[in-house]
Image 1: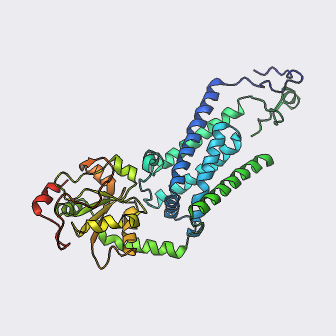
Image 2 (image 1 turned 90 degrees about the vertical axis):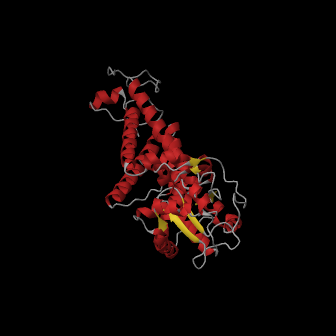
Image 3 (image 1 turned 180 degrees about the horizontal axis):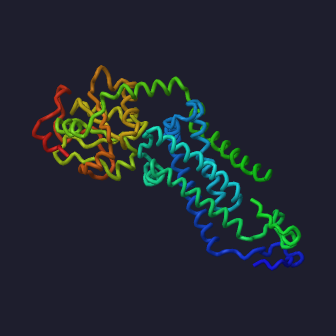
Length: 186
Length: 198
């Protein structure tokens, strides 16, 4: 608990708030699940890019001309963001990117459902089980659950209290001066 | 905030660069042609009269039709339709996009039957239709011969209906279990076909 005292001089790595072990574990589980799923999903797409391009076209939401380019880039974004999330290298940025992607995918799946488009082919080779998770209609719920996990990870990171050199962190002095804690940098 | 944005842009740039390299290496088209796509969709729509249901599928198998599983080789090896010990031919596997690689075997197949049924994963799976179009393009299907149909529900239908299945890779090299036809038009003996019924 923060008692308002300044951290020891030169000690810029002392935690500013007591970490919540449960929240830390929840964040870890969230990163493992979301990051792992995105990496596996990216691998499945990279194995058959033309098939993924065909899936994008079947949504009928973007011009046909750009569907190939989208199919080639999206899996790499998923792979990189998934790895960065797992390794916490650029944790916040990877998380935000994955949140945006999930939001877009959810809107696309929801729109396809509303329009009655039956676009999933059940294909996926060894990763057919993955398709069971992401195919409509349960795919929408899966995406929402993944976004919720990312929010959990965000909370875990914000409340971890771990100080980073040079980060815009709130200090006890700042808190005491303006009475308002600054959130940990994302 | 700016730093964070720069990192996101860096991720997107790295992904785009990797995608560009992969597309060049695999010879993939970066821009899809609208005309080519619409032509493909039109040809797929024209195959509506080639789609058959389970009853018609069983009927054709009873008549000695050959069956081709248009799924990936590992999916086929894991499990595929079993036509039974009395079948003249085993179920063949032609993975998506490999029609041209199996032309020799497909021509050998015509010695046993003039009717072929394709199936892939499900009703929304495009592989069967794509193989049909590919076989048209290379002249294997011409002027209505051979008579090729597509079992619409595919592997999903086979599983849902509890049809007999087996496992193992496709090792067929051209020899049938029965006698090849002499004129290429007779689907085979009724006695053998009844035993074929799944």
